Length: 112
Length: 114
Image (cartoon, rainbow over the protein chains, first blue to last red):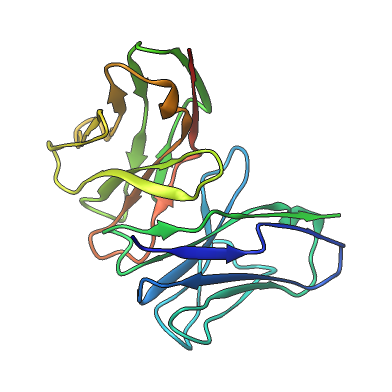
């Protein structure tokens, strides 16, 4: 079964601090995605990647950067965290989103 | 733009009763979207429950069914008899046939009472 692992599972950060969320997949999928989930909103796409070295902006990229150093790893970076970025973040991988995506367990981030 | 609407944020159903979770979509830039239901069990990541890519067809999995109704732009999720283990958050989603992303609804939290 395809595996996507996120770390950390929980994170408390201070406003203005730097936060890095990590994601690792063992599926050998080309595409990887970062979503955030907030009450009253569906999962919203922040950044995605087609492969090592590539990153693309999703629907809500402001305040976030992404890095894909290898096929397996995809990071989400908050250079200057703000309380509005308090959320649950999901990483996913897949060959094509219209086929099937595999999700990690999520990272709960609180920015105080 | 394209969107998915789930009208109920939370649904409570007694065990062995029937369930319907409503989902409608708007696909202005996608002529024939692919439609999905994903489920998130407590403490887990989202996983695909079922998908349908052809209008008029029905998808089914684990006792759940959903029919792609192009005329009504709907993809409601139904189950005849729910179990406590079905308690989870259910997300409706769509994507284009060559799209690069999924568009999700807000999710519906299903609580099944014993």
